Image (cartoon, rainbow, N blue to C red; front, side):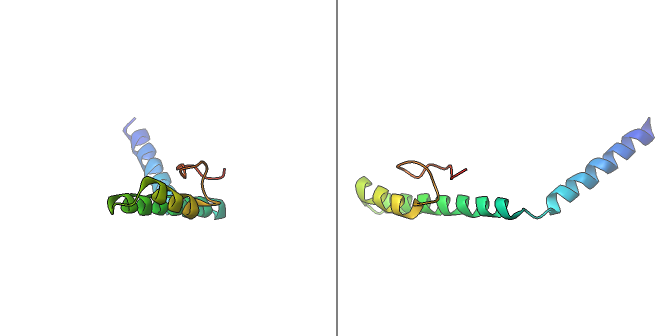
Length: 81
């Protein structure tokens, strides 16, 4: 019984290490890049509002920055898939 638990622990450790070192495929890299662009656009909009920009002005910049990478009027944190 002790041997079975040790073997199971070794398998789980090895599979976790393998999963952590796996490189994302091309589609995953595209998704990662899109999420970063969306997040950067939202951060820029937040800074615009903090600096006293009007909601209309800041949202216009947000819409421009998110063109072709996100969905919705306010650049929802969902992308094209």
